[in-house]
Amino acid sequence: MEKIVEQTLLYDFYGKLLTEHQKSIYEDVILNDYSLSEIAEENGISRQGVHDLVKRCNKILKDYEEKLHLVEKFIETKDMVNKINQLTKDYLQSKDIQCIEEIQEISNHIVKNF
Amino acid sequence: MEKIVEQTLLYDFYGKLLTEHQKSIYEDVILNDYSLSEIAEENGISRQGVHDLVKRCNKILKDYEEKLHLVEKFIETKDMVNKINQLTKDYLQSKDIQCIEEIQEISNHIVKNF
Image (cartoon, rainbow over all chains, first blue to last red; front, side):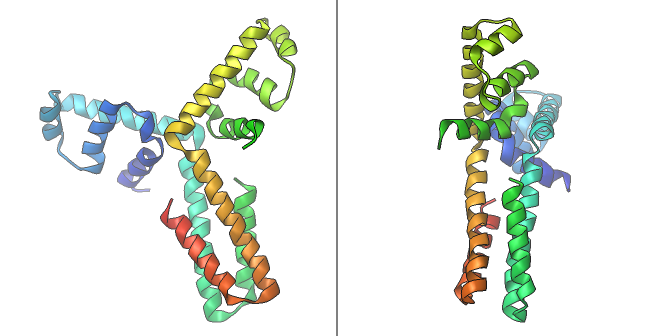
């Protein structure tokens, strides 16, 4: 996965567990794409300080994912639901009943693996 | 939701964030349904100590859910996937094309709200 996508996803899931200060700076760097110098000046800390804080936040977010695997689980489920969506389109075109059976299998699999 | 179901779900999602000691005692009380006295004796702590530890764990797990809402999100998704599963059965019986359209809507909704 692209690094920025991974960071955004991890932040979406676990960002609420960071402190307000961490969230504010992390968002400016990762989501708003401000330069380290701008953020450093605005917050009265050094560029190195901003860099270290982002590194520390990345580690915190990754540690949560390593323990909980919830981003991984959500991505898997989303992929399967996308597949279901595609199968409904295939079915409307082809009227092949196998599409319906496949939707049934996938939805069973999702429900059982929750 | 029934309290024991809620506790089990919260533990499934966030249990890995507890310490080994907390996990071991929490599992004995909530999942294995041992008595407080048994667990107290086995771990060389008081019944009150076991009670307090479980209460503290419940609070930790609830605090994570209050911040992240991931159990809530998973339950919602599971309900919708169950509905998709039911609609495939309905369709195979009735051959009503509305069932397929509804599957399409629900799967779109899940993917967009992830």
